[in-house]
Structures are given as C-alpha cells and as structure tokens.
Image (cartoon, rainbow, N blue to C red):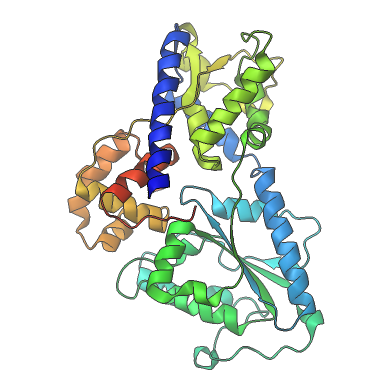
Length: 401
C-alpha cells in the first residue's frame, strides 16, 4: 500500500514536470488530430507483438512442454497473466501461431473471443467448439473427475491455446460455469498441453469465486518492457513520421531518455506505452490539414520520402476526470472482464442498461472509455491513475502486476 502511494505520487510529480517542460518547448505545435491518431494506431496494430513478449512466451512454453513430454506427472498447462489493458490474446497468438519451430501441433478451439449474447450459454458453446477437435475429450462431463490415463508420452504433441480466459465468464449468477467446465476439461485431457492467457484482475477474481489457481501450477506474468524494447517495437512506425533532425548533437541521449521516460510512465506495459506515445505526438499547426492527413498511407511510406513530420514531447499520463461511484463500478467491471458489450456490462453490475447509458457516453467523450465494434474497454493510458482511484475507494484491485 505504501509502495503504491509512493509510486502514484512519483508518477503524478513526473507527469506535472513533463507537462511543465513541454509548455515551454512545443511552441507552434498542436496535438495530432483524431484521424491521424487512428491511422497510426491501425499501423501499430499491424505490427507483431513486442519481441520481448514473444521470446518470453516461447521460452517458457518450450521449457514446460519439454518437461510434459518427458514426465508423465508434469503439469499440462501454462498460464500467462497480463495487465488488463494489454493485448494478451494477440501476444499469445503472435508468439505461438507464427512459431516456426513450435514443439507441437497448435490448435485454437476458442478463437472467437466475443462472449455469446446469452452468457449462461457459454458452457454449451465451449463444449460445442471443443467437440470439433478429436484430440480433446469433452463430451462426458460426469466422467471428468479423473484424468485420461495416458502412458504413451509420444502422443503428447498437441498444444491447445486459450488466448483470453476472461472472455469465457461474466460476473453474474452462473456466469463462471464455463470457467469451471474448462478447468475440468484441462485437468481431464492430459494428452494436450494448454496455454492460457488471462488478465491479472480476472485471474484474481476467479480465484476468489472458484479457486482457479489451485488447479494450475505454472503461472507467470508477462515481462515489463524497458525503453530499448519499446523503441525496437515501435521504430518501424516512428521512423516514418517523427522528425529527429531538430534535436541537437546529443540526439541519441535524448532519444534514449524519451524511451526510458515512456517505459517509466507506462509501467512497462505495451498498450499503455502505445497510447502515451500517440498522445505525445505534435504537429505543426499549418500541417494540421484534414485533406492532407486523410490520404496518408503509412504502409507505403519510408522515412526518407515522408512528407509528414511529427514531433515528440515528453510522455505523461493524461488527466483522469472526476468519477462518480457508478463510473467506478462500470470501469472496475471492464478491468475484470476486458472488452464488453453494453448489455453484458449492465448484467455484470446488476443494473438496467438505461441507467448506465449517460455515464458511458460521458466517459467515451472524455476518453476514459473506448468503443470498438460495440465493445467497451478502458482506454489504456488511464489505467495507472484509475487503479489508484479505485484502490483509494475500497475497490478490489490487483496487487501482483
């Protein structure tokens, strides 16, 4: 608690100092418009996940699977926990599905991450999806109190990826039956190795309601990304638009300082860093033309031919607006569940959807929430201050990130 308070105070002080510095250094520059920010975000989403994430995931899986393939009693699962605003499903997919020397045959039976309209039908839909794979015994639920006897280690060749566990439950009566079913399926099918992704908040909630951690021996968190890791990841985009020529002869040191600051402000979380980088970008006011920016194509532009020049100011956490209690409840639910539709959000809170609409619209307008294909999510750059806000108001928050 004391560490959290000190860390929060340090971040606020650094954020104020950065903003004070920027007010003197960004004369003539304005924030980039939404249309450009959206184009940049689309280009970033087309990048592979950070190499540091992929290396960590592949190394951990290779070690665990080698043990499982040589020891009958070895654990047959590995859980990766992430910050709730991190893209855990994409990270695991990029790490495993594009792995040229994967130590097994990869299947992804639950690739569709969207919850069904009726969350109480999750168990049935999970069972239906798993039934398409002969490697997985999923029909006789009553017999799942014992694992399938498998004395032939050579048959242990299947890697089953469940990329986003929080999408298979909802905080309501009967809402985590699907998780309990999956838990039994994984214990029953020792001939498969299960790689599971989950956000840390969801994992701790599920541990409270169905003791999920008791069933999984191998659980680890994603690593923190330092400045050079972030720079290596985002550089294909950065080098096409950011003007480094205006920096003086100490440009290398200044660049390293910028990326170190970005890592510190984002707590080493990739998605937070992406949003803070976008928010740190500035453009000359005379270049801020909708017509000029709408046709810009990042995929076909190199740094040498780019006609678009952006500037970076010191990254800092955005201001968190004053929140009502209902705001806190709905934001807390989204951090546990990940992206959610409005009906599911209302169900998780036990409130009519109509009671939430006005607050959702306000939080969307203020940038605390984002919406993608009808699913709401917490905007990543607000995570750090929001976690502090929720903890100060006696909400359950994860303490293990």
